[in-house]
Length: 489
Image 1: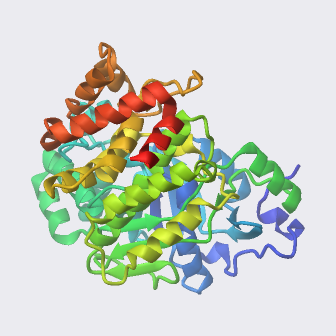
Image 2 (image 1 turned 180 degrees about the vertical axis):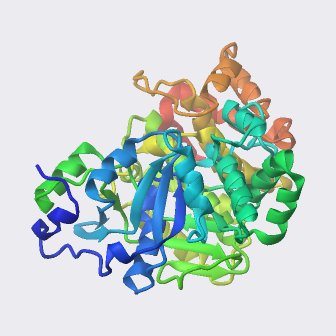
Image 3 (image 1 turned 45 degrees about the vertical axis):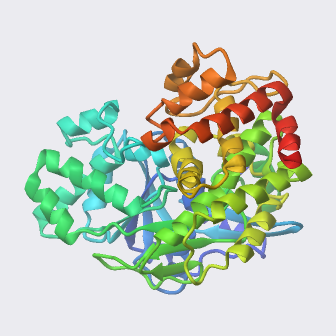
């Protein structure tokens, strides 16, 4: 079977339209670090829109900091891939051509540095997951115990981390008399722009105080909030798309109709005239907080409770009335901790979220969402818990979600089937829980785990009691039993 590529475009069905621009004339004004399915279904689509609108400065050079997998998917396809937008019985396919080249950084560190330092590069976007910033989740400071970051603290000749690449490239731009690029974190971190800026400035200052001052004065790290559900592509998806296209597309992505990108209007270099789905604003934090605590918080609760119950997909979890009730109650609790912008109708947003979760064609896997929980829980669940405790409010739903995460660390679901706990702190968490014999002991071990739990929560008696209650319930009655008990409270 032939692969999707420039030479096979003529073989595509008539309802799949190729890019409306001359790809050979495109200049790459964007470098994206962390090429994966989410970027290909979100930011790359936004830049593809700009190219289709006639501004050919916004091609993308993408980079992987680890695996060559995406490069090996895309390079034989000349960077082309299809995006399937699924909504119930409706499916639309669009060909995306914005990604012009993929660099595997460990193989070609100098190529990535050259792309970042190029005068054509105006924007750098990042989707490297929470752990990619090499920050301590509790303090927000650089995690100097990380071996890759430790190497970058010694030398930036061949960087190993995203902050390392940014600092090294900004040093090259400064030496060449170029303006910095605008660096935009697109990960689900609270105050993601400030965190990226602090990581870059701290690392820069360890090497060159003058460089750090230059970045602080001239650089830009806008806050952002991104939202689109992008489930992992399966071999079955690729087989179905191959049958539809008549050529094989190993880089395809699938997603929902909804796309949102809220960006703080703070750029130090050129930017495109963003189109549909992008909102420039003076304050991203209220949007970010609502998304983290409503969409992402609910997703985490669904993932751990559903995963423990042996349920594979989000929409299947929500087919249980008791799970639906739990999500609504979690939203009731989280909503009281928000300061939503005037443009955000929270009731309408909640209805829209439930409809998105119910989309059966996305087949969003609970185990995909469950990854890297130690990096996600502080902002998704522990922050609203802290706010409600401070206000003297209950935390039943939020603590049930956290208790499910604690139970998830056992690596065994309610039927006894095993799974990998995919988390950068999995070994440390397992060590902390190893000698805990009772639910109360396990809760105490987690509350004292300061890499995840902030100090103000560690000694809270109400949280301890609530977590112990729900963890006991999950361990004795299973996740479904705990959800049924939650309904009856």
